[in-house]
Image 1 (cartoon, rainbow, N blue to C red):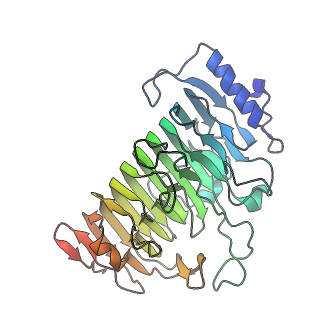
Image 2 (image 1 turned 180 degrees about the horizontal axis):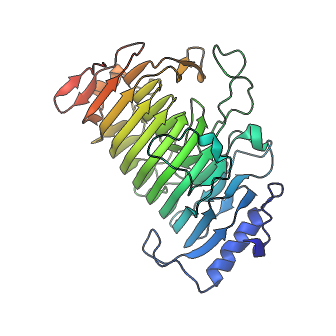
Length: 401
């Protein structure tokens, strides 16, 4: 990487040097033998340092190994144009020509990269092998609406061993809120979404296909965001995802609402999802998009406003969307007093308060769609009882002890 001109001192823009390193790796003979698509990959190694990037495009068949002592932050400052590619890294290809067989992987072991912000570590997690996305605009001077990775038309990918830092500050006027305003993060660390030129009839989907995201640890998540926002995709696997604050696993899929192209989420598995002092651990919000076969297992929610929510799109009652043939099982919700409870005057604000409910479900979803729950439990004191959820026995209201 340094031979390609990357400085890694946290001051300049290293995007062009990273692109040069990709091209050099593809021209070299050495290969990682078995990428996500089963094909070899050219390897780019990113050594320890702090690298400023913006809109870094990946070539197909590239494996980027980022040292655990490396930090990736945004280049260009707070006033960058976020109307296009609002991310440090983008995986995308034009219609019919997806970016294929790409990986972004943390390697080696290091306590660097402001990883002390992870303390105390959630039980069962480590951040030692993780590289860092520093998405805290208050610390880096970057734009609050820029993600770490934006994945669109990509087929065959792996993201592994990531530690991400957001900013959860709020306006001074919010009761019980923290101080400051502009640094608050307004983008999930990872965005999976579709291209807007996909055929409206659903004959093709230009979105993330055949991908795995695992070992992602997020801190300082604000109420509206967290480690991911999953708008669209096919055949995806999420493993070992944690967020302190925000939403740990956010299936919020609004791409088809009033737009002239098709989108869906289909064939998704998520396992070992945890949220602490958060707004919710798992969110199902279709917003006019029809989604199928989404299966979530082993969920822990500790001191969150809600453990799991299923929401109805009241703005589009004629076509509210759904999650069909979808399940969630092995869910444990424990109340606490550090939850991000919503404030009525603005959906983007919250007060740190007692957990509101273990399971939240808009009543309208009962006649439209329901995620089916397997084993689930809740304990502690909540400000209101859980809503009814669908189980194998029918609708039931969980009782917390």
